[in-house]
Image (cartoon, rainbow, N blue to C red; front, side, top):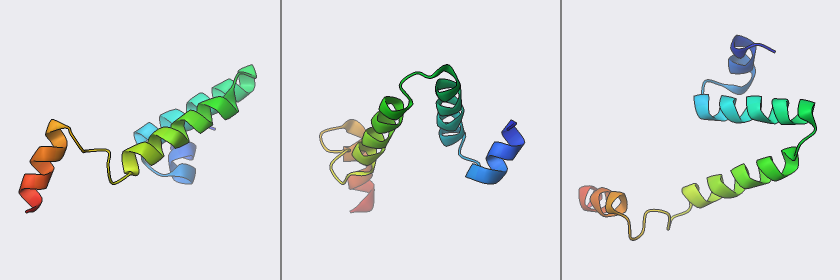
Length: 67
């Protein structure tokens, strides 16, 4: 599958496409694809959580703008 096919199938998120490509390559090389995917899912959940921005400069700035 080339990049245009991947974009058509998975969407235009470059970060997600890089993950898909890495997974495909890992699978072809038979190296830890499940561990890689599990780590990405865990990180996505952390970033999507309501507490990710707490105690960060970014979180403070966003909080001030929304109030």
